Image 1 (cartoon, rainbow, N blue to C red):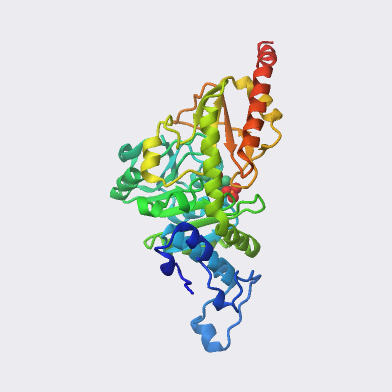
Image 2 (cartoon, helix red, strand yellow):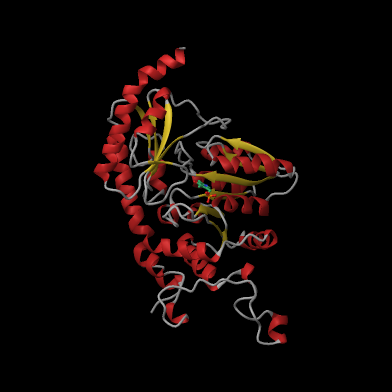
Length: 400
Ligand SMILES: *Cc1c(COP(=O)(O)O)cnc(C)c1O
């Protein structure tokens, strides 16, 4: 039986997902790895303790459970090493802590996940790091923002809530020419639909809370690095002492096994619903990179091998947003995404500084879950109908 990532290098994605990371015969033939709850690992004698010459040393450095997930993710990302941290937010913070110091300059896409901006504004600025936000569609134009002290260019593509697609290869080559390293929050695509390290990125970050977990029952972050950046990432991971918990790591590995088939369903339903929404009355725009109407469709098509299930739409009148959301019965109102259940929320772009904020209406983000598509369409139609009915009274209130 094949075990390591190498053996699955040439198989199809779903075959990989079913087998990577763990070798059952290394643990009595049990199909899944044990969930190792641990701190101490015993050494057989003083010499081994002194040389640390055994696979596991202490649980902060890894366990058979975390190792199974890390090796699986390395196979998917093509990374030299992966660390697991307690949330996606921690996965964003860790590599920035590892590669930035006082006096450095960091460039961050202006359409970044909002808590990433909070981390940069609160923590990085306080550390004496100069934080600058750039327009996500800047592409090779990032060259003119790069300085001698620019150490990191942080990307996220497609963008949170507005789904601008970044020209990652162009940004990466400009950054590398200036000796900066490139990080990417790849949560939307998962390593199945985009592999950042193959497109010039040095460190890829995921909120495994989303599709890898897939069931809205855990928080976990993953950071995967290429060979050049791995030692420094690993060093900071140990220094901060933020390993993920064993049960969550196990659940994410479990989630990976079905992520391919789940994503295929999310993709199909989301594209069908997004195309359908484009023709519904009351919708000003649909922001989904797989639609030919999307301004960055060509870049998405060039770089990504598919789309996940999250996109946004713009309701023509801002005052209709609450009526729309309150009429939904299948879509839940809540944050996060990547789980089996559909979700809706109104996005707020007030924190953006240089990117486009004018969407002429209410921006609603939809996560298309695994429910039957006709039921989801009916639910959205119910929302749109309520929005149409509610537009007038709400407008009147605004005038008063
Ligand atoms: C959700 C999310 C995160 C943070 O993940 P948590 O596990 O919720 O902290 C980071 N980046 C992006 C793009 C996300 O959508």
